[in-house]
Length: 439
Image (cartoon, rainbow, N blue to C red; front, side, top):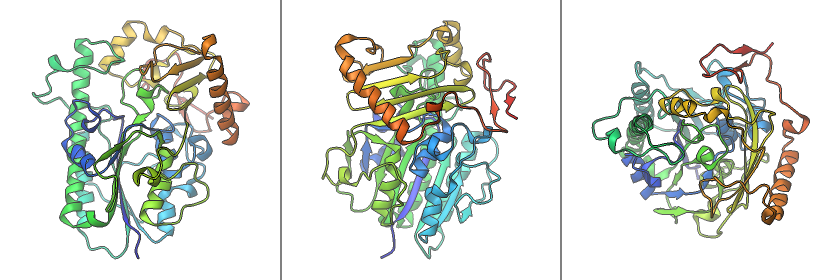
């Protein structure tokens, strides 16, 4: 029996700010997909920055184990490309196909693990480029198939570069995320995000419609996910839930959990073993995650009791690590200067509002501990609360054990950027400013 086909749909910077997660963001195609799938309410990235998150998901190990401590296009290259899911599936006889965005390799890498990289004809706006990606993926799906396939289809939006919102997304009646002040600037900014997410959703619809039209949906696992939280202050590139939260939706024929939601704690490291398990291919021995199939089939209430996430470099060096359980979160900042780093927040109207209010001048506690049931917004730091001493000890122990098991380079002190990397300084405001080239 041939393995199941796999379509991996992924987007930038969307977190869970999508219609199926209860946000007033118009994504009807993803809503329809969610109704046919299992939607995971508590899925989290292993690294809330673009390249490290995708490398962790697609290698099945932590970003630092894979050697990706920063952005690929800034010179942080994967040290262990042989672990990539596309290479594993290619070795198992799949036709591995790439359409659109990938953030694990430099674009001029000869072997990314894909047998084919589809030609994308779109020019102009990000929305137009994404539309061309969707149409190329749909055309591929309409081609005759001689073997099982893995189609990785990536969209740029809702990355920054938002389109103008349509009239129905009137900023006067939009509420920005709760971690931001409600101002005309943040409302307009979030309205533009909503339009970007809607554009991405249309592209997902093109691919999903092609699966239905070709009847390939009857033998295809569809995975939809994103890299990390949305590109607003205190979200992307942060270890609060607003930064590490991700959408994760799985659809496949015969799923007994179709049309349900799952509240179990899930890491994106669990996606790789789940794909292998459901698609019917051997699981490589290096994986850190656990298959979610017991959750999907109602055979288990959980597959893990904790998960971890990391940031080392984004535009600049801002090392931090966290451990999260169902009840608690601990964050540790490793740099001497614990103030939020300006260059690691994408330029935006919301950033200007926060900058003007002094957001980037306020140091953060080096250790932070939150009770996520009583304080889901992560506002009340309990790290020095005597009543939570035992909890802190347990969470510190979990974090240190994980760092040692995964040979985290932060255990040896500050982590130097590799030769050829491009890094912004803490003193700079925007990532677009001149960078330091590491020699």
